[in-house]
Length: 141
Length: 277
Image (cartoon, rainbow over the protein chains, first blue to last red):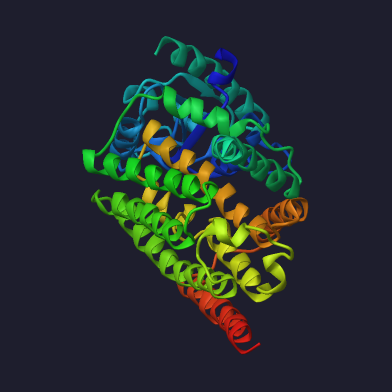
């Protein structure tokens, strides 16, 4: 039973800003070459059905309230993953006028995936860590 | 009688298996490895382990009524009841799904329900006409009467109705090109958008009854030869996956044209043939 628990992680990805590079690398994970659906991972564009929130890019002033809203709509248990250098520590966009704050200043972040752009392999490893964390949260729920 | 009850009980299991096969075969068609066969079961377990949340109580009442009538459809079908009654319970079930979508003020849910209503308009007329041809050919709408002491399959007298039924199922499967009500990139999850956790699982469970039900109607068309019917049903299922993976989404007008332009003439020609010959 506990084996069957965390085998259906559905993710929601949100592009907070930046260059779209990590966004494309993230969606590349769904292609036949990487195929993360073999772990049961599906991209559901709906926060109410999502278990993992993947945020890409630096948090701009416009995207900050959207992320708070999306995070609030996701039912527990849930995990947040920051993908790419921009989301982890602002990266190349550090000091830009539109960049507001870091992701972990507004919502609790569980896994950080570095890289500019983050490679699909790294992203899959990060999602794997997020799933392990998510499993412990389901068991504790 | 015992056989009928066993059939009703294994229907959701067959549905679960079909949903798993659906994802596995689709993945293989896209040159992917795909999720394990038990993935729909894992999805259900996951959905039930999520924290409960809903918009308002009426959405839940409609979701449960939707499931109730879908189960009633399958029960009536395997107890060999009247085809018209089966048709009405099926329509009621979809009607409550639409009401559930309308009872929240979310634009995606609202738009999705409108599209679901369009789908209802596109296929229910055709489906009812197919049932009427069965009634005209056999002199009764009772499945028990239709299936009693058959010597030749229904397919021989109703080949064009059979083709029309195939059109109905292609639309009803909710796959491209007719995934209009729940088009991911247009209306998120359509009428299901505002449901989460176990209340979304209700619709997955209702799918577990719906898909085997539609495939079972194909078996009825070949009835004294059960094995032929099962092979045809499996072939129809595979064909719907093939169509789903090789086409892109059409508009609701395309869907209406598809069923009304090709489906209704097919049934009418079959009906005229039955009456004249």
